[in-house]
Image 1: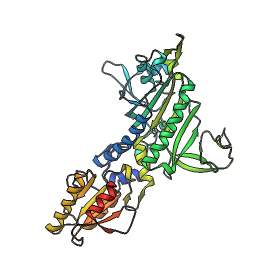
Image 2: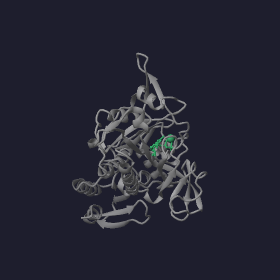
Image 3: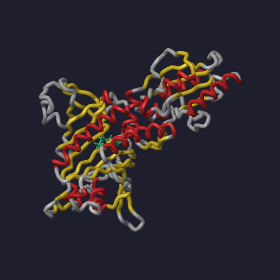
Length: 415
Ligand code: ATP
Ligand code: MG
């Protein structure tokens, strides 16, 4: 994409009302726009990153045997009353409103209830099980505090996966497979090294649940990391559980962390309340055994920015960068422009995602923008660049080097 085509502008100063590093940088670099506290729009650069994260998660969900669907955000209160979660004493984060005729409706903060109800039309026999369904969908939560940028939105994207199994014996191996898939996802996104599995108390509806916590100074959660095996306990569980449930270790280190994923064994709580049953081989009616598994793609993106940025801007990990190369022409002559245009064409031709800064602007401004936007590889063609060569520099390095166009293509595409 030519940078002059991009409608977004970078800005030197962070908005005064933002305290979080992720929102400051993402707004300055033109990835997101703040609508109001806790509500952000994704602009083209931001959407490219978000879509890459979604793509990684989707691949891993499909590999688990997941089927993608898309449930409605507007909710009928009937199904929620059946589990007691319409009540604001049980759930204080609802956004509720009224239909024209006066009936109450709510904007989903999660989807266990409607999906369980929906599955009554599709599950009747043991032959229909197990089933794994997931979606990428906007959730609405009236969060009390929203000062962590896209890490805590009042409207945010969630990947939520739900499993429907015959019983615990069928459920447990799948739950373990999801744990592995989550580790793969966080590794592919670039936060694997900082992300640990945390035992969670499970809140009100699950005795078996785990969180994936990314250790990060900006985190709102506190976890207790076992010094022996690096498994963590969350803050709520540490009071009742004083030794590591995995290795028996007794020493813990306190860390600030962000919960990027959460997995729950739900058992039959929802299927009992909503009457989701199946007939087994003997014709007996039994409740379906469920699990639910969430990841916040936007939250993960925010965490990446918190972990990978410096005083100049963002440093995107390769797998989720908005572009692979930031090609910059410092063209004061037609010759430079021609060389840079030709390289851009070559990169386009072999499908290398390139942001091409062909704007009529000062070198300093172009470099500052490139550092702020944070594409992993910068490639510059200027008056000084010999014909057929290009000056490249990784975002993480300070020393540019000259290579040929062919070498650049080979380096990126691995061919
Ligand atoms: P938290 O304790 O941080 O509020 P949660 O326990 O409410 O999180 P879940 O209900 O399990 O979160 O949601 C599943 C996933 O959705 C979380 O692991 C997180 O990645 C993401 N998520 C939750 N709330 C938000 C939010 N307000 N903004 C962005 N992502 C969120
Ligand atoms: Mg929450």
